[in-house]
Image (cartoon, rainbow, N blue to C red):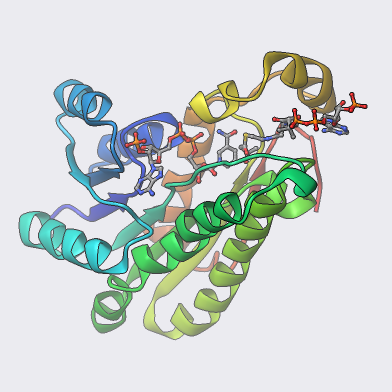
Amino acid sequence: MARVALVTGGSRGIGEAISKALKAEGYDVAATYAGNDEKAAAFTEATGIKTYKWNVADYEASKAGIAQIEADLGPIDTVVANAGITRDAPFHKMSPEQWKEVVDTNLTGVFNTIHPIWPGMRERKFGRVIVISSINGQKGQFGQVNYAATKAGDLGIVKSLAQEGARAGITANAICPGYIGTEMVRAIPEEVLNSKIIPQIPAGRLGEPEEIARCVAFLASEDSGFINGSTISANGAQFFV
Ligand code: CAA
Ligand code: NAP
């Protein structure tokens, strides 16, 4: 039987590359998204990967969506918590709404994604949990107090889950991408990107979504079982922990 993987935010950007890479490795993949029906339909048309729509910030919706995927494909043994958003502003301009939206999606959304799947992984004594954090959770970033806090929090989730899951055959790891060429990065004002961001990347370029997907495929594989609680940085030498 093929292994079953769930990729949240798996219909575009980094998540799209992850969904495709896992499918190429032989997994049955379910990709979720929040609202962009057109992109999700085009993704399914192009890849044959089924998509499911719910808001990761909503626990009951996550639970119901995951139950549906398990009914359709079988027990999920690999979960990639990838869905995330930015609401950038300097702290003095950041609204409580911008804070809450990012926390609800990027931090609570990770809890909501893993929590309904975790008991089944414990019972079956196998699981792979992979969380897409960020370089900016490691180093902080001008204009991202909200986002950096959630991505640092995601690393805390992974390190704790690694300790809880280890004896049940479950690993939990994080990937901290640097700046990757997706719509999230294209939303940065061009002048800021060119003057403040790219010059800080020794590689002199943005990363490709596929470069992150390869890290996911590695961590998801059965022989990565002793890699647990780790963080893989893939950032073109922009930052070292
Ligand atoms: N470092 C130092 N100063 C900076 C700066 C930086 N990185 N970015 C902006 N500034 C300065 C500007 O030069 C400007 O200075 P002056 O007032 O002296 O001219 C000032 O801050 C701009 O202040 P404003 O009040 O006008 O700011 P704004 O309301 O226009 O918003 C911002 C600024 C939203 C933070 C904008 O600069 C921005 O989008 N920055 C990019 C933030 C970023 O890196 N986001 C990452 C998104 S992608 C992602 O998150 C993926 C991932 O994980 C890597
Ligand atoms: P993206 O291109 O904006 O794609 C985001 C994906 O997440 C889309 O599929 C989107 O669905 C989905 N999504 C957003 N909010 C959601 C919600 N509330 N519920 C369910 N799905 C939701 O982003 P990306 O650049 O690929 O980023 C993917 C992840 O990598 C994020 O966690 C991000 O923080 C992280 N990351 C990105 C970079 C980078 O440079 N791009 C760097 C480091 C870390 P819709 O299509 O329906 O909107």
